[in-house]
Length: 213
Image (tube, rainbow, N blue to C red; front, side, top):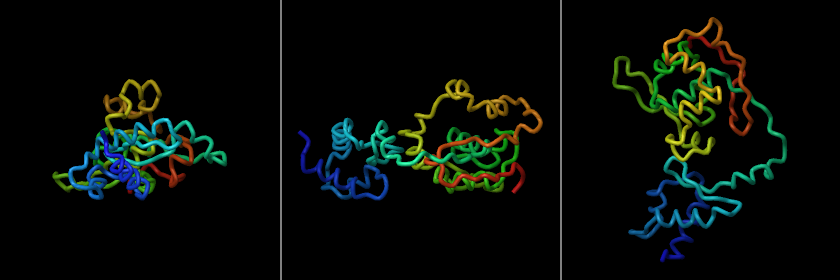
């Protein structure tokens, strides 16, 4: 039987945390030998039917509002913000190829990207620097963050949709052309910007250019 007191301790630790916690971070507050994974599984099961659920995102645990109740917490109609096609494609490339360098991103897209494209994704908290590649010039690499997984409801990057699903949704057409070596039509890179909900991007840029830094 699971120790009820240990279960309460894990619950208290997660409620008091100001960020998602790893198993090791939770274990640091508990007596040595505590089966943290077992406790987390039991706690998550007990919260599953409730208004707040316990979820794992990128190896980190946190409480969040049950997805089916999100609508009752929204007092205002979400304001539409704009995320450029360049930023959306860049985010997708980083997520599927991380760690990815700027050069890799440009090679896959078939066009150069402005510094502001990556900056807007970093400001949103979805992309982070991931060290430098051991190659000539030691280019900076980029990877997604735990906040990216939380934002899109992913447990890990393994939950990203597959190529068939993305193509069916029309989200990978420009990237797919570049990956197969087909040139883009002239001017295609200057796409109209895509609209996302405000809760998906707090720092979206409305004025990105598709040129050199």
